Image (tube, rainbow, N blue to C red; front, side, top):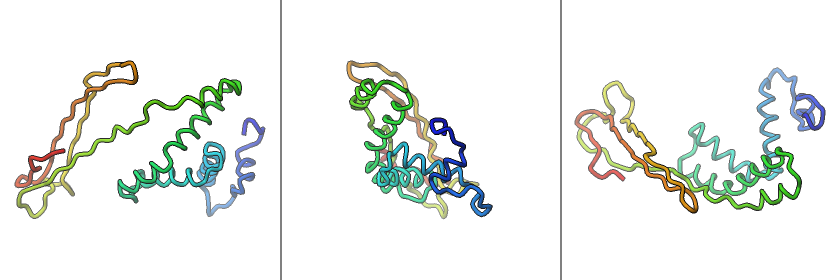
Length: 176
């Protein structure tokens, strides 16, 4: 809007987003989505849709974890590139510097995702603790040390698990 010298409503009209329909008062959300797709993702609709589906599936809980992961993996590399390109563009650096910055490959974009698998054992009509809807796993993670190495960092952590279930139930000895 700043570059074009136009208002938000004018920008919305360039994307065919109706701003004065009382039936659709959230036109700014739609405009934001169109701008993200066209400006940040450079009109790469397929990558945008995969990234959005993964994000929405996680945020709103309508996808299973394996489907979220599949969608995210489809879009991750291109999404990182689109965001880096957008940020570099906003920096206002010369084309030469921008090209150099964009040629640098990210060193570490590995997930730090952790998974706990176990099995509840014991006889109970309901495995949930009294007053709860389901068994609860409280998981506390802490970084104990962080050491810079020649390439990257070495991180040591500590995990603490507390399982909250109905008393006859417990987690089996196998916790991975």
